[in-house]
Image (cartoon, rainbow, N blue to C red; front, side, top):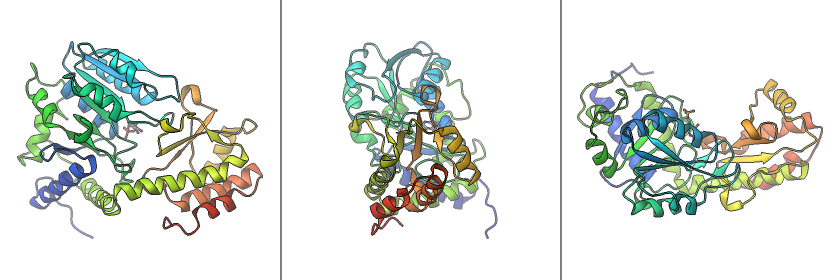
Length: 356
Ligand SMILES: *Cc1c(COP(=O)(O)O)cnc(C)c1O
């Protein structure tokens, strides 16, 4: 038990400085990049990017091949951008050539690295190669990748990125860790008018996180929880975390393929490792099965929109990429579906691994 500290306490500022340094490592930023926690969920991280980096009349090229890409397009438009869309069929990654073909006079390019709604991984390094020499800023949603997979903001040429505390770091929800490149900060500083959003204005954030002057009250206890989760992730290492995801992925497929589940994303190179999108067996009433799982306090995400009733989305972010929760899920699934062998195949595939 410790007493609460105030948001202007020197110990909290010291904690914040450690968080900022760890975020630079997690995102792979340049040494002086600005990092901070926003007091809100991942969507606030997304919105803050458009609020600070888009001015009315700018052209924003938004890659939208799922629900979160479309959310980006909606936000960019609300901040006054002319939105130019690059799309791809559901379950298919954005084609970098389509980005290259639409780059004329673009001020900002935005893409979701891992599209949670369909389990698709977009080719961020390839898109970065196209954006790099265009003069446009490059904003990447790393909500389902950073903290679980190696991420190289500076090397790839990314100007702005964000995630949500509850995703790959398994910290409590309510914080959006962001990173801003020096180039993006310079573009922000050259704005003709201040951003229409006050709360996450980069300058205001800088005042608190760098100058240690009051801007708004940060959720101090969430900062402590986040610091612990981020530290644990850094201690484990991104390469090790990515390998944990891979082992879990193949164990889950070994367990479920024989009972009729299959990959939704056809091209293996387009699969997001941390969200396994699986077509459910055609004979199965998936909503009813999920309801019965829910009765046992096991929550499985179905599809969204066009994929509703067609897919299940199994998360492998942070502490969900462990055998124990999946073993519990598979034990219940065997009972509900009236099949066996799922747990046994899963055990065989994870046996002897260091994941337990
Ligand atoms: C979850 C998610 C978000 C939004 O995060 P919230 O914390 O729900 O606001 C944004 N982008 C992606 C890819 C996500 O998976």
